[in-house]
Image 1 (cartoon, one colour):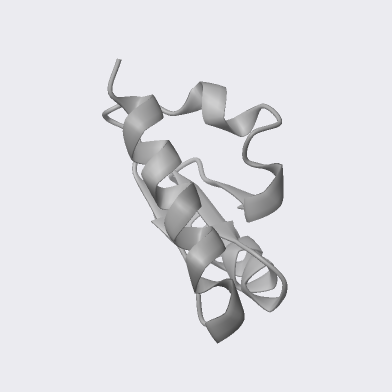
Image 2 (spheres, rainbow, N blue to C red; image 1 turned 30 degrees about the vertical axis):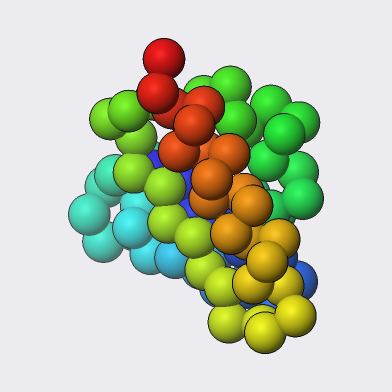
Length: 76
């Protein structure tokens, strides 16, 4: 499972991935939204859950773009 966030939401993503591992023993990783194209995107499949965290108003458009990219990339 991937948790994706930017700025302060990245810290929340890190915490979410740690808690998922800690409580449920499920592998999870957190990524900075801007770094998604640098490797993490290649790991996305149709079966992989990806959680986007976007609580900062001026970043919503960038996050929406990342969501579209993940949706399109996972459809192979």
